Each structure stands twice: as C-alpha cells, then as structure tokens.
Image (cartoon, rainbow, N blue to C red; front, top):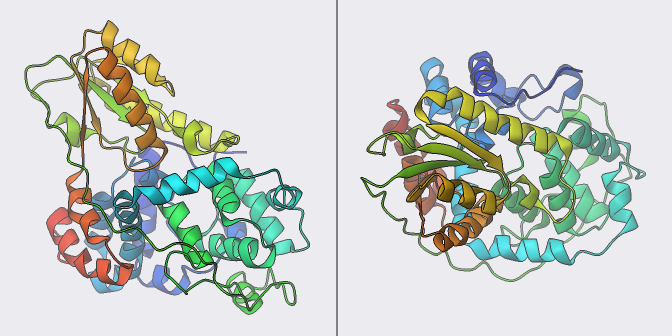
Length: 399
C-alpha cells in the first residue's frame, strides 16, 4: 500500500495547493462528513504537517486567503487557529499536562480498554474507527469526537486511557489538542458542558454507513474534576549570544527552523534533531507515529542542508545530543521553542545534560505563538476575536 501521509514538506505544500479551492464553501458545508472510503475529500488532512510544522499556520492561512475572502474561509481558518488556542491554553497551565501524564502512568491493566483499543466491542462504528486509527494513524475530527464520547459515556472507560490511545496512534497527535479535546468531550474543560454522541448524528454524517441505534448512552452527566489552575505568564526565554560557537537543534514539534537560522549571526557549526515520540506514553507508540516523525525530521534536515552545517544525530537521547555538542566544541545550542508536552519534557532533560558540559541551550519562540498564546486565557469564543489581527499581522491579508 502507498503511504497515506508521506512525511515531507513537499507533500504538505502539494496537499495545501490541492485543498485551497475547497477551503471556502465546500469545507464550511461538508467538513463534518466522515468519508474514509472516499479519502476524506472535504478536509485538508494537513494536520500531521501542521503538528510537526512542516508547514506553518501563517503559510496555510495566507494560501487560503489568496483564494478566498475571510468570510468564505472563516470555518477552516478557525480550525487552524484552534491548534494555537489549545497550545496557548496548555502552555499557561502546564500542570494539566503533568496531571494527565501522572494519571496515564497510574492506569491499571483493563481488559475492557484492551478490547476497545482492538475494536472488539458490540458497537460496529466504534470498532471501525479503532481499526482505521491503528491502521492509518488518522481519524476524521468528527469521528474522534464520537469515539471519545462513546469511550467515556457508553463504554465508561477512563478518558485518560482513551487520550493515551489516540496520542500513541495519531500521527498528528498533539499533546495540547488531544488532551484538551478529550477533556472537553468529558465535560472537564468547559465546566458542565460535555459532548454526547447520538446515533442520528452519526448516521447523517457517515451517509448511513453507521447507525448505532439503541447502542449508545444518550443521557449522561459530565465528568467532574478540580477547577482549572489560573493561567501563568509565558516563560521568559534566553537570548542568543553572538560570537559563540553555535549548534542548531531541531525537534519534532517544529521542523521549519528558518526563523531561528535568520536570528543567528552566522551559520551553525552543525545541526542535530532531538525526537520525543517515545515520550508520548509509557505504552508502545505506533509504528505509524515513529515512521512519520523520524522521516519528517530527515526531510527537514535534507531540505535545509545548505544552511545547517554538519548534520549530527537524529535521536531520542538527550545524552547523545550533549555528546555531539561537546564533541563539536559547541558553546550554545539554539532551538525552536518546545511547548508543554513530550518535546518540552525532552528539552528540559537536554538542558540539564548540556549544562553538565558547560553548554547553554537557548530556545526561540515563534512570533505567531508570542502573539496568539497569551490570548488563550478563557474560551475559544474570546480567543477568536483576535484572529483577524493575527491574519493581518502574519499573512498580510485582511482578516
């Protein structure tokens, strides 16, 4: 079988070019239809590429606004901006991620969870989505909502186990979007508001392919939990020091480091890549996720090789990166900022390893993130008010 998601920037740009004509009315009217048999024709399927920033949010929005007015493409642009909203929300409340990971580590073996993950439940629709996820590393967003609702309210399984299942298998698995979306379905994210899947809705948006009448819990209370912590300010980052022998570090959360290279006073001595896919879960991460992440990193290094100096290791070991930097007589390592999640955890471990070698780690946050994330203090309704300004500032198109 051909690879459904070739992990390259060239593929991301090709998909963007193909999708742009459909980003207006077609997307607005048909985005909720789950049609895997037709290759999900009404959604962009850019999420794996945005997740790893093989393409960036401003690139995607600019391409869409070159073809459509903001009003025509607003639904699609909002979906792109949801990713920034979720990242900002979690960035200012990192304890939510820490609590989730602690819960995942504490999960006990559960045969019902195993059956659900293997697609062995009485609900055929749910089983099909579980199989599609494991086989392809992808699910339509509407199917993700139905799946999570059935997992929590009909099968009555721990939401953390479901979020972990997704994060281990989704090649676009984003720690913020995934964790907070599961919390939203459960009723923990927006207090008192949860999402219940209904057979009629599933039947309509699967074109009758699935109709689980009488199989779903359609009346259930939202889960309860502790109040959200107050948002903290974004972390202050260090400054790149000119004149130091500098190495560039990539990580899987940002594989388009041009903005970092542009901030350097000269080319880096060399470039390495720290992967964190194995940190997604204490359980096994799928071969689809491992393959996409590793090959996407290699593609990024290949595409920018003329600007990167000598190519160093692509590894999940912070010790390997520290040894590379020390052996290359690097004085500072500069990297795109790694947000809260596996990449952020990996970078914290690396910082300690580099400090032991007398080497400084400097992370640089994107201007888009600096502008968007501080507005994720409340719900998306408030956040979306700043989307026109983001578009004007970062795409040159009026929003």
